[in-house]
Length: 112
Image (cartoon, rainbow, N blue to C red):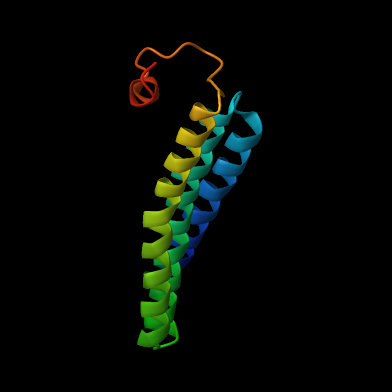
């Protein structure tokens, strides 16, 4: 079981690293938000699953496992929501992607 826990932790760490590299390499604010939100959320999910399994199986602490699950759920819900709000705020303040978008859903929201 320890190997399964370690695999989840490593997968989570790899996704978090990929998100960090994506933030550094992406050309504009919207691409950086995409990299930070999606990949970091998946990274957190892997680490959280590993933490829940560790707390439940190795430590025999159901309370700790529930706390980790609640924290993971809150991050899983609020991270994409916060990124969406930041993207709409950036768009409304005149920040645009470097490349022309095929479909401009945010422009529709702001009557452009």
